[in-house]
Image (cartoon, rainbow, N blue to C red; front, side):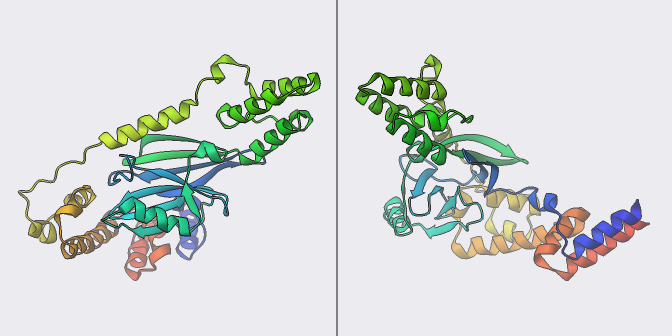
Length: 323
């Protein structure tokens, strides 16, 4: 058993894939949950401890690129804006420095040059569900988006042609908020009994005749509540009695980590002070990892940084396992 374990670790050390290790602890990254011909489901956990309002106290906004057919989410923290693609998880996020005189106006123009315009998910054939969650102890914003654009186009064509035949075998339920207004417009135009009968069949497939589905989309209400909750979140106050020199020279990794993660810290430090602390934080983090990190964690880190110190520590731990 030990030999098998050591053999597996050897392959990991030399660059072989171990997807479960790479997936642990990942935030600020979009993943595909489910994808088929009718719907694409995406999920992401975004750290929310330092999020700042973008517009009207809202701490996240949606943008859409018609050219790329991409729904994206905009976040603002650490004096910069970041736009994450929700439909293209492998695409690199776009980063923009904030303009202190007109931050949102500035970013809006910059995003327009990249083809992105402010939008709401339901206007581009998608639904979204956002909630406040903790991911492995980290305060996050859980964003789940479902893209129904292909299914929506299929239903719109059926409604426009007053022909239900193309959607009879469709099993995925299209949320009513995406199609109700469009359906109502063509329902008013229906003049023949055949057209009315076809729309009746389509309405049954969409559950438009079910009373409890005719109410406004509950997910939109939930998002409004999340935005309100985010706006009310008050960052913890930094203790002014502790001088900068303490964090620069004496503070432990845990103390420095807590200090830097406080959203108000960056506002009370100069650029050079903040840089100095982040450099010390990185060094302390590495020392802590080398001292207390598990074998799997060290292997995962070594695969990225190829640091000889990590390799040496890994070999030491492997010998301990062997003994």
